Image (tube, rainbow over all chains, first blue to last red; front, side, top):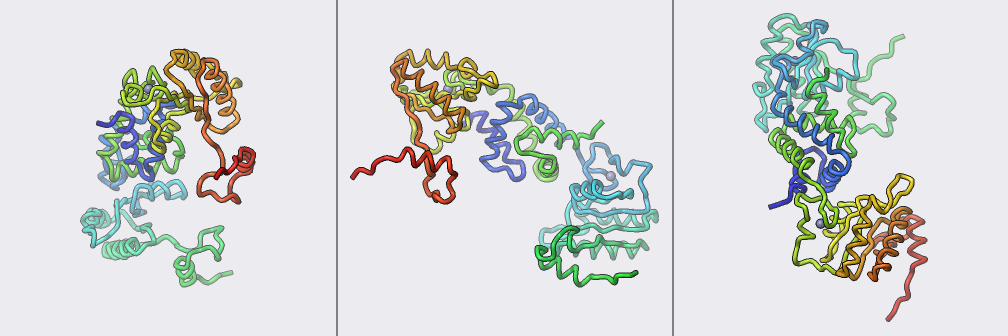
Length: 198
Length: 198
Ligand SMILES: [Zn+2]
Ligand SMILES: [Zn+2]
């Protein structure tokens, strides 16, 4: 039977990127200096894993049936941005001035892992596009093989419903130096170059 | 009023080395893939911050009044190793074959921060040495300015009670290359060189 301290160290390892050494540091740190903060974390965490579910509209994390973005009256309902994960949604929300709505796949098409259109809720997305409110489907899946395949599928889905699909621009990051950009990105960026107009 | 998800992200920041970005990753990871693990962590953490106190004998973390090391009948009572933190104690326990007992200062002498002998429980340590059971006080405070001052103080304390003080060896790490060892270590190591006997 292990001690409570050993159990605590072990329990911290459930967190991403936390190995034995940092789990130990976390346990000691909380016990030495942050008991109140640790107690607060325990309470919020216990509540979160039970109470946070998924928005019925966009599938993002939400405590309520419909999340506050989907429920907002001040968002543009004619733009819908599709992302793979809640973290991607948050990144776009924080970095851009986008005022439309989102759809969170909670994954990407991956037939070998048994993840098809149904698992990503694409039937519901299709029904939503059929409602006619959405005019542009902004596809922001990741520029990976599976993300691209998913984007391709989503674009077809949009066109079937008379919705314009669009895709984020991918290329050399601003401030990046060509010398240090990976080959794939550089090749893609070169191939999708555009004319400079006056 | 922030959402439960925002509160969770904020709460994770109490952990050492966890900034906004990793707190966010932790929250998403637990919600997406580790709800059971998160629930377990919450429960163990809540229990730990309330139930883990300090051993009355060695001041290390302990759920019981006397920790299992101090309570063990198979440890050598004539050696006492003094360390600054519970993490230091664990490191020695895991790396060496040491079978004596420990004394955890939970700090080091630091007059400017108001940390004197009393705050480190040195009165109790002194009383323990006076009992006559301990024959060697192994001083394993860190090789920093404050750690050295603490070691110096502890050595005097030991001698007053007729106990032999000893200090870990400090120098070039095994497998380390001289070229990459910091100056202070190299200088110390050079100054404390010893004769090679046949
Ligand atoms: Zn929503
Ligand atoms: Zn103890």
